[in-house]
Image (tube, one colour):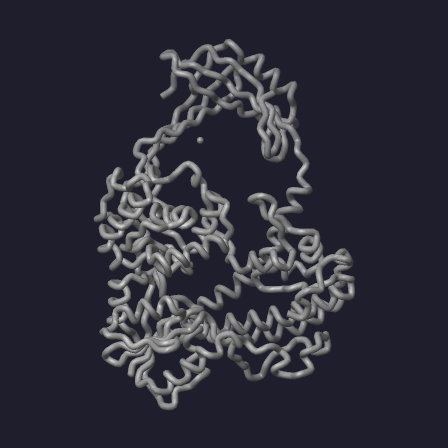
Length: 585
């Protein structure tokens, strides 16, 4: 009997749907007509044991116990999923072949691997890997018929294991250490420390402090309103000379209003001479398709959606509607073999948008033979960028439609021409002063015709939803409209911590090491050994830090867990600006 172990029920049902019928449904599994059986996890069925499992003394939080470093790591069954573990234990021990169908990423690899290891088959059986990123039948059937040896992914699993255990060590020890110090300072609650969450909070705190420390200082610009001999109007901005240096700030902005007024008065109603004109032809390729983080930041800026909202919507689009591929992806490239499916994906997008009374995409001229830099097998690992599938839906909610629209747009942009424009820079002399005029002329809209006004100028990186939500739950962050700021507790905590804990440097080093482990360039010990040595000093250092500014804050809940010619008739005007605000003066 072949046993498919899926990461979640929805994936399990998708696999069963392509197996021979009739099916026999059991509690927690489905058996096909040929004897193949499909069962599933419900996310993580196992979790790291709490410190007190290793030693009962650790139930009490004390500096004397730190750092806590297990000699032999232990997992325990989650109480809510114990029944499904029982189902899987019986099936695994009956199987002649196990097929790992976890999600196609680092965590998905570990999730099923650790379950198999935890249960332990009664006999040595082959374990194969099924990689599924699209829940539609044709894609699932293809994946099921192209199984790989699970041993090919051992390094990926080791990387996830190292990450999991290292996060446990870092979080458990430093959270206990600083919570104890917070208690001494009069803080009621948990001062959680994490190798990602704390640098994220640190970034927000430092940004808030920079804004608070900012002192607005007015500066003055002079713009010349010019007209060519052909009566074409344009504007040019005055560039202060070296003789004006004493009136300029460190960014070269003029702080003297009398100087600006003097320049404006001198140039008004006089001729101007074009000293030089440079016209460059430029082009921009379409942005790459989405990773989850890129999608979260775009949806946040476009629609005010939180990272968690975007993730939840993506899961619904993937699991319920089956209109997008696997969403928990950190990749922005696509395998070349998927290029052949472009026409079918386009048809599905077009039909879905028509069904939802949205502008059809067939008004654009796509070239489905075109291959942008997005198609690159070398940059695709176990999973690829998030793209639409060939599935049509007429029942997307307003939020789902917004996210689906972003994903569809980024995919279809790959089949439109580059955006082409001419950038012109003119240097103009008026009464001895130099003025610069810049213009941008669009020659070919290309892929930019797909970009809606409300989503222009979007970013490329974001923080994982769970980290943000945790910082909110700890009352370290707060929302003010679309803006996220640090609370007083968050600011005080970050200011009390050693700077190294609040910077992203260590996380970047960890991720580099984890990538090397996943690619079998380094071993598990490359991450774990240095960390266990560093924890001794980190926990000892914590004892000298008392975050007194936290006194009376917190809650006890959760404690313990831009061709020459002549121009004429310029007129000058002064514009007063301040950093961050622009005002006509």
